[in-house]
Length: 55
Image 1 (cartoon, rainbow, N blue to C red):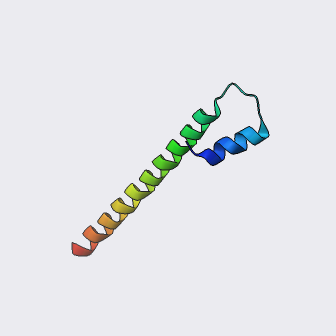
Image 2: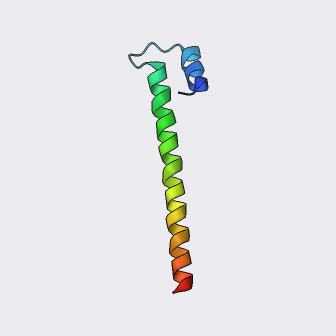
């Protein structure tokens, strides 16, 4: 998980049942998944354009 998120959570000192490291890991994972999704979309769109040009 990212340390910055953990620091922010600790500074707010919100006493919740959710572990701060768990929240940070979830946010890191969703950000990583988003990056992969964007990359896949770019690859698909460029491949589609390339195919269209060559047909």
